[in-house]
Image (tube, rainbow, N blue to C red; front, side, top):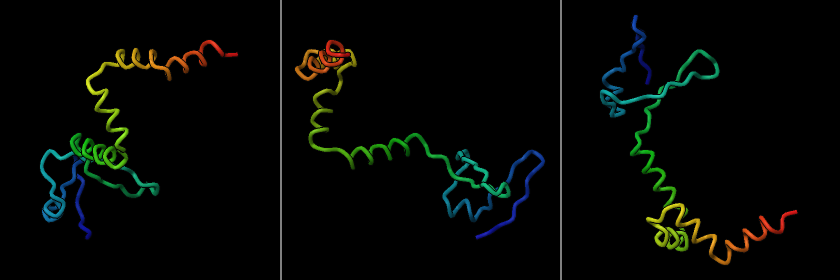
Length: 106
């Protein structure tokens, strides 16, 4: 589909009604405009909302989540960074890590 539009003196263009309806565009929608390598054309894409970006991250997290990672998340949910650091440094794995990193360093 191709339409011709005119750039106004204020640098604005109007997207034809049938295209706005086809794409479900609404007033106040935000867009990202990119110049193409030929410097003769542009690409206009609707900017994702924060909600859309968070939904994509949730899908990615769920796709890569394992029962072990979910259990660890649930176990540590609500703890502060300092609480997690204290638990880690007092655990056998944490103590081994700190010994090797700070006391056996060459």
